[in-house]
Image (cartoon, rainbow, N blue to C red; front, side):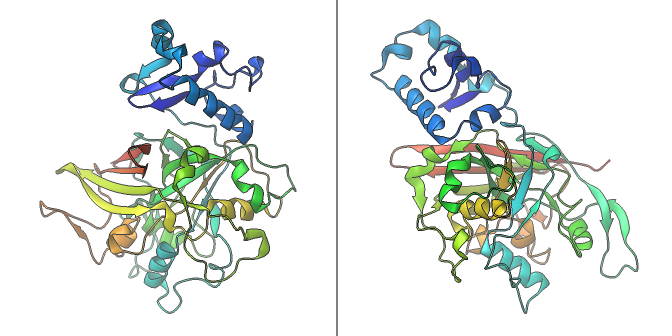
Length: 385
C-alpha cells in the first residue's frame, strides 16, 4: 500500500514494519503489507484519521524522522514512474447509480420527450447492480463487446460488435466497515462508512443496451468492463471542498434527509485521443457537485432494506453531467444520440468511440496554492474478437 506524495509513492508497508502505526493499529494486523486496502478499510474512520495524522506529522518540514534519515527515505519513497498501480481493493460487489438529474433528463428527452424523468426519479436514488469481476484499473485496454442489437428497421435482432460504444464520466466510493445483514445504515452514519473516492468510467454499449434493457436493467451493455483510477482520495482529504449540492425539488423521505452539505467541488475532465488524433482533445468538463443524489443518500438507500455492504464494495455515481452542453458526461449526450457528432480541428468527427481511441478521465480539487488530484483513468478501445 502506498500514498501519493508529489512525484513519489510513500511505502506504508515499510513504515508499518518500522512501527510507526503501532499506536493506532495492532502490530500483528499488518494491514499495509497487503495487496489490497480491504483490511485497512474495515478498521473504520477513527483509525483512518489517526493514520492520516501520523503521515502528516512524518511529512512535516519540522519533523526529523524522515527529513534527517536518508536511508529510511530511500526505503519508503518510490518514484511514481517506477511503480505499477493495481486495483486498490478486492471488490466484492459493485453498484452503479443514476444520480445526475441533467444526465437522466437528457437521456429521457431522447427516449420519452413527454416525460423525461420517470415518476420515481425525484424520490429515490435509482441504481443497478453491476459486475465486479470486470472492474479494471486505469490503462487496461478495453475490448469492444459483441451482443444482440436491433436496428429500428430490422425485423429481428442481429448479433455482432457494438457500433455505439460509449464512455460514462463517473466517480465511485469504497465502503469501509459496512453493516451486518438486516441492519440499515442511517444517513447520519453514512460518511463513517465511506473510505474514499475514485474516478470511474462505466463503459457502455448503447445499441446493446437499447435492445436488452426491456424490461429489466443493464446487462451485457455494461458488464464487459468498468475502469477505475487506482488512487483513492479519502473524505478527510476532501473536507475543504465540501459544498452544497443541487436543491432537491421534493423533500426526500426521512431516511434520506440530512442537514449537512453532502457534495464536493471536484472538477472533472474527459479527453479523447485517436489514431489520427495524436493530441488529446477535451470533450467534456463537469463537476461532482452537480449530482442530485449525494453519496450519503446513495449509501443509506442501498442499505435501508438490510442489504449488507462490505469493506471494498464499490458504489458509483452514474454519469455526471452538468447544466451546460460541454458538461455532458457521455457521447450519448454530447453527440445527442449520434445526431450532432463532435467535430475536431482536423475535421474528424465522433458520435461513438472508434477502435484505437483512448478515453481519459481526470479529476482534481483546487485549493489556495495546492491541488488534490485523483490521477486519471484511461483505456484504449481494441477491436472486437
